[in-house]
Image (cartoon, rainbow, N blue to C red; front, top):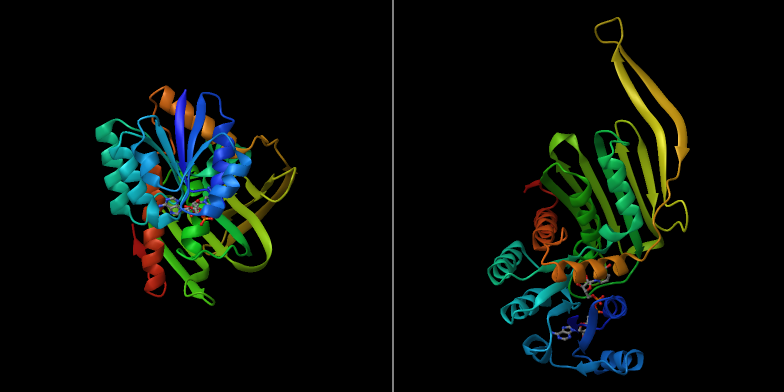
Length: 333
Ligand SMILES: NC(=O)c1ccc[n+]([C@@H]2O[C@H](COP(=O)([O-])OP(=O)(O)OC[C@H]3O[C@@H](n4cnc5c(N)ncnc54)[C@H](O)[C@@H]3O)[C@@H](O)[C@H]2O)c1
């Protein structure tokens, strides 16, 4: 039985507690939050779980094996470092850290102490992303051309990070998972309108082998959109995450270009065949992810969404921030 302490019970913390609480082989021993209002909500939902406002009580407890860090990004490094120093495994929210140097230090620390780090890249545990990964692996889409995602809605405005650090980690963790080629160059543009932080941004990532990813993130959209187009040589797909059923539609569409008789004559033929929607597993992503964390710790296994995966995402975020600050300059990774 793994005894878990959870630090941070704001917006996302209750999801984490609910899923770990229901996971086999895991017991949520303590919930910690600095805010009395958060602790009041936790007490109402879980009257039997120990509560504290002091993170040191969780970090130093000899009764706790692992700690879930569900606090704002700028606190992740200090809390994760203290947790590892006290011999605890770490489940930490996305994005892993505020910069790559912090992530590298935590990875080394965990390695030296033989402890696990798992970064909550929730989308990797959704039925949709698992299905898309399967389609890529099986070669259904053929060689990938592009990943083009729109992740926009009204709010939730964050006070400590801009829209890139808030919403783009989802897409960056997905491209990291789906595209085996190396990200080479990042370009980001965006604008601030309300609270001094970029509230909309456009990120372009060039990968080796001519693959390109484009991510549109926006807190100022009148409607919520979660639509991703993925184009491949053989097939193309549309993933609409807001659809209850038929989240993924695969189109047998494409373009063939061949040389005609004249030297400069190109023959372009368009292929437009069937469209179908594969079955997508409906289980809650966090349920699968929390179970996987418990399994990895019990089996002393390194998770695939480990500190290294978190670091790769933070590197792309850092490059995007750098590009944004320099008016969209191309930043090499
Ligand atoms: N994986 C996902 O889909 C997903 C979704 C939402 C948020 N998140 C991530 O979860 C993290 C938290 O986001 P949120 O929206 O819940 O933030 P939030 O501000 O709503 O909640 C954070 C809570 O942490 C508490 N806190 C802060 N510092 C603390 C400390 N040192 N000790 C104890 N408590 C402390 C605050 O009092 C607050 O209640 C962020 O990293 C965010 O990116 C992930």
